[in-house]
Each structure stands twice: as structure tokens, then as C-alpha cells.
Length: 275
DNA sequence: ACGAGCGCCTGTCGGC
DNA sequence: TGCCGACAGGCGCTCG
Image: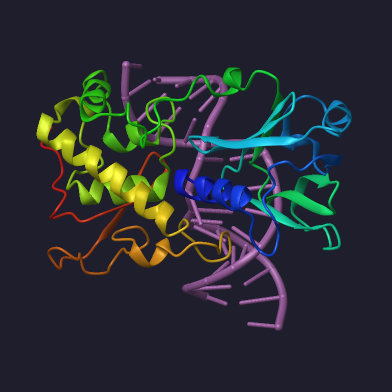
């Protein structure tokens, strides 16, 4: 599920508090539960349960699609992958069937990492940079400029869809926002990255930032049963719109497969590359 | 270097 | 109604 805007939404909700729950900042952990061991990359479940209690939540960050809870001595890194959610609730609530890991705070609240499909991953580490160092630049940061994107694209001869989904290249884009950004930029997803002109690159740069910013403003994209939090689904232009008329030209939106992923585009506004 | 295929999981939806 | 296959917002691996 979550791409950058959804994870950023989790971060902001935890910082600000929601659902009648206060912010998690300053909370002290009393107990830790690992309900499915496979969710932990490191350390072992037993070590996790021993190491976490007593630590306090000092800050919450995000890097790409990773949510980072900075504790007194360790950092807890959560990657929701396809079906992950973070839930702040009272310990009086029954534990969700799909809860894979949870923290009980001393004030009676609980942070639950919900993961229907067991694709999500969790790290507890004193060196978060070791987990995150493989990631490409943050697309919304000031240092991510059109010039930087141009250099990245010229450095490879790959289809744009593959390129944008690759977290080593840019951190945070997934299938929805990639399709939306390519549509806004009027670029076909099979276009080879190093064939883009400066102005096409600038269009793509603007489109990436626009779809991510709008996704955050709308608190993420909810799709049917997986994530019901956000409003952004109302504002999608191509994703899951196959057969609908393109808002720009009226021709039907098409769905094809690239990188084993459903890929949505307007074949008229996003003409296929000639090569 | 690049991209296709597959595996990891659980749930929903549509077709028969 | 029930069964069965296709499909799903991610990513790491192998192979050609």
C-alpha cells in the first residue's frame, strides 16, 4: 500500500495525535510484542522484547517509504510494503488479527503495526543509516532539483516506469504516484530515461513533486479495503481509470503491464517512444 | 545493464 | 451459494 504520501501521513498523525489519542512524542515504552517473527529483520524477537522497554519516543521521521521512530538509544524503522498500517489506539482495544508487532506505552496506549500480507519489515537499530543508505534522494527535498533528476535519468538507459519505481534511484514513489506523475508529465512509461530533454525532465520533476504534495495534502490514497484513511483517490487521473475518458483529450485510459505492475496511461497524451 | 519471472502472503472480486 | 482464478499500493532474488 503505502507510498511516500501515505507514510508521511502516518508520521504526521503520530506526531500530532489522532483518533482521540495524544502525540506519541515523549511516550515511554512499557512492553513490546512480536506476533509474527518474520516481520523483524533485526534483531531477534527475544532481543527486541528486551531492548525496547524503558525507551522513550524522541522524534518521528521518514525516509522514502520508511517510517522511523527515534527512541532514546535505538531507532525503530517500519516499512509497510504492500498492506502495512500504523495504528495508535488504547490498550483496551482488542489486538487486530493482522497485528504483527506492537508497543505498549506507559500511559495505556498502544502502537500497532498492522500488516495483512506479511510483506512489511521492521528494523531496530542504533545505526538507522545502515538500513537507509541504499535509498535515492528524497523527491520533496530542496536538494532534489531538476538538474539532479536530469543527471539521474541520463545516467541510465531504462524505461521511466522501472526507473521511478526503483528506490535506489528516487525514494518514495510506488505504482500509483508513478503512473500519475508520468501522465501529468505527458511521458510514456516505456520512454528510455536518457532520451529525455531538459524540458521534459523539468516537466517530470514538477509532476513528481505535484502528485506527492497533493497526496500528502489529501492524507494519502485510499483504495478499497486496504487503506481507508485518505481522500486522494478522488483526485487520481489515470490509476485504476482504465476505460474512462482522459480528462485532457477524452480518449480512453489504457492499462498495460510494465515491470509486472498494472500501468495506466493515456495513449494519446503519452505517445509511445519511437525506438 | 537491463528487464522479465518468481516468490513471499492474505484478502477481495468477478465469473461460472 | 460456493469454488477458483486473477489480481492487489512492494521488493529482493535469479537468470538470460
